[in-house]
Length: 214
Ligand SMILES: [Zn+2]
Picture 1 (cartoon, rainbow, N blue to C red):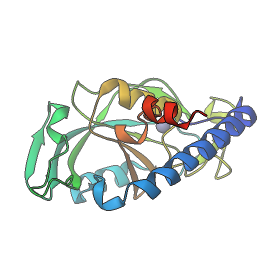
Picture 2: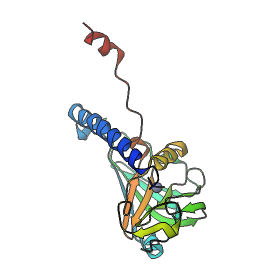
Picture 3: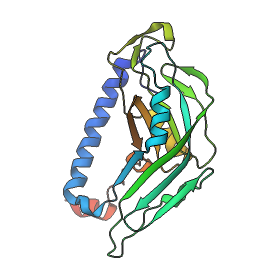
Picture 4: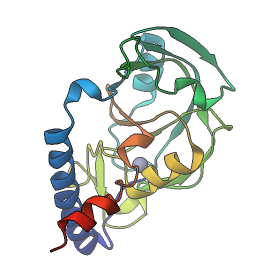
């Protein structure tokens, strides 16, 4: 699903403001918390799945979003590797602690995907659901549309090659509790996103707030 034409101006402005706030927060976090102490997540779509997704990609501007389920994937951390076959419990990818107490980095490797039927598909969104614990992939078509109708779309433009998850995409991932989800935004472009990217910021500590009062 994408941010689309209709309410564009306002939503973009709101998103820009939110982004500015988030940027401020993330900069603040990066100052107090060095990257070495955080878990990094990396996603790779392996050859077979990549070729299958690329083969079904089209640059036709008059298309609707398509969706897939990740039927086989595995995670590797700096300590271990686990294979996931569908259906797969999503909590297998929980952070693994390195022996020295630091979080391990995680690599998600997607081996196999299968198309899943969508309903109410438009150029800007589609309704679909993979089984519980099975991560989802969906496309963002390379077009800009004046409405949710394919005959109102043109190739390229402001909404094309949008590789960021929309607010709805993020909410769906959080609701499902999957370890990751993927957007295909060009023939060979696959963007992974993770629940931790959208977690609510921790509220300021009350005891510190009390100290700060005159
Ligand atoms: Zn989307």
